[in-house]
Amino acid sequence: MKKKIGLLFMLVMLQIISIQAQQFGSANLIDGTVFRGEDIFQGDIDGDGDVDLVVASYETDADSLFWYENNGSGIFSTPHFVTSNLDIARAVMVADLNDDGAMDIISASQADRKVAWYENDGTGLNWTTHNLTTSANYAIGLDVADLDDDGKLDVIFTATGDEQISWFKNLGSGDFSGEIIISNQVIDAISVSAVDLDNDDKLDILFSSWGDSIGWFKNNGNGNFGTINFVSNLIDNPKTAYAADLDGDNWPDIISASNYDDKVAWYKNDGSANFGVQQIIDSTVDYAMTAEPIDIDGDADYDILVAGFSKGEISWYENDGNASFSKHIVDTTASNKYRSVVATDIDGDGDLDLAAVAQNKVVWFENLNPAGLFPIAKAQTNFYPNPIIQEGEWSVEKPIFVEKVTVFNAVGQVEYEYSVGKICTEIHIQRNDLKSGCYFLNVYGNEGEFITKFFVE
Image 1: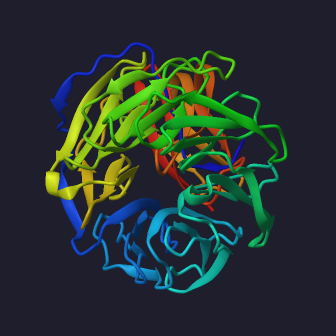
Image 2 (image 1 turned 180 degrees about the vertical axis):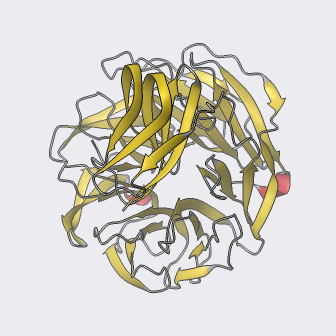
Image 3 (image 1 turned 180 degrees about the horizontal axis):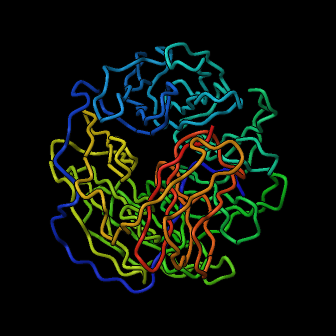
């Protein structure tokens, strides 16, 4: 399995029904003093088993990278600052880069040309700064993934001013190689995402650029990349591009969010990593910032989570399983001017809540329907041991027909799934490549869906 922090998407026939969703509550204020929040990411920073939030802001020569400690029920602390030596942070991610069991923080910052990672001592209160580069002209895009399949998480970034996409190889124990250039011919490269687009078990590089294009580079193995493959240039200032299989054909398609034409759109993968014409999902998201594939309602297909800047919009598009979508508006408060949104279980009740960073605040929205939008089975179940070290056993009180099993991580991404197709009373879950943290086991059977929260040590 490829280690990947980051995301995926697609669509075939599309209908949008614009309705006011009732699944999420109103905004809960975490912090109302943020100056131009740019990005938000989630992770258990202090190792206490719940989801904390990390924010990058546009502060110049000030405290522009910080995190909020969650008490487990959605009550957050005042910000804990990671560093004050950062100038206009534009992107942030969370990952354990040195395999010590503590979640580290990675950032890309524009004005000081830095890509850096901050080593966590396990408490989230003491950080050691490791600069990967201080010469990335206009560093904006960021992802973390195992590009060379050696079991260690590498760091990928875009340097817009250099028209460049590059990566740093993780050598182990927190050591990294020098900069490895993938391409220096991507005009105004903005976002970057590592994803296997051609189903060859190697993570390719997907990008968007302010040069009004999205495209990708094929991974030829061991982190060696081919030439640029353009997907579309019929797009005005695309801010992000992700990929995921929307229609269930097992081929990842591409989704984009673009600022100047207010579009969320998708591009179908024909099964040979050739992508079709742009198909518009929505053209009314004023200054669309992100369109991220994630299973919001827990029905084992990819929905789309969207943030729009100008009208302060947070919305999600429900996938019916056949790539037809219904739009659900979570918030449209113009003064909020959202830039980034994530889905994660903030209050520990087993469903995906939303957290967003806006122009001057950080907020979260509670998922008010713990059962999601799908039938939940009632039979008594057990999961042991929890947390697991190598293997866990899920058991149910009576025999049921199990159709399939899916394991989701804390942000709703599918870690792995498999078909069962038989009557059984227990399911064995292997740790495989699951890193330490919180996961959700979804067992789909003839009595509905069983959802179990479990942890990996």
